Image (cartoon, rainbow, N blue to C red; front, side, top):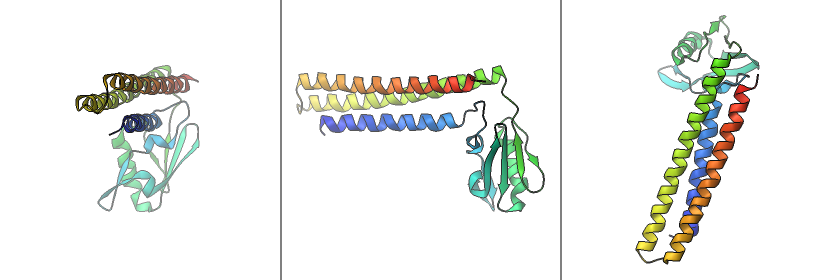
Length: 186
């Protein structure tokens, strides 16, 4: 295995950690409600757990309302139950045609709690990045142990991996900071 392959491996896997962080951020509530709030909800569709957005149309009609229109009206009760079990902080309103979710404006405490979750997601991403760094460093040390690279090459390679790690940790910090500002903005 070449050193460039190890660098590419590290960059690739650290980038994946950033993608997971962005996905996690989608589940957080900001001042404006998004359909991502119900993204992870599964509905029992004829005995099969199905993602809500595959059984119904899910639309954020304004800053505080999500409207769910099932393609099969017999699913209304099932969708309502799934939303209540998901405990997303609102009660579904079923009018026999569609389900409406009315989200009240966020309080300062709710905003702070969401900002705290954003920080936790950021920490999780940093841990994943540091795990990738450890794997890459282990691969480099193994190359040195097998006498495939010199001591100087090993030292330079470990420094390069640290540079890549620092770059991605900074990206995580920037993403978390931006998300916190978005959450706290009224």
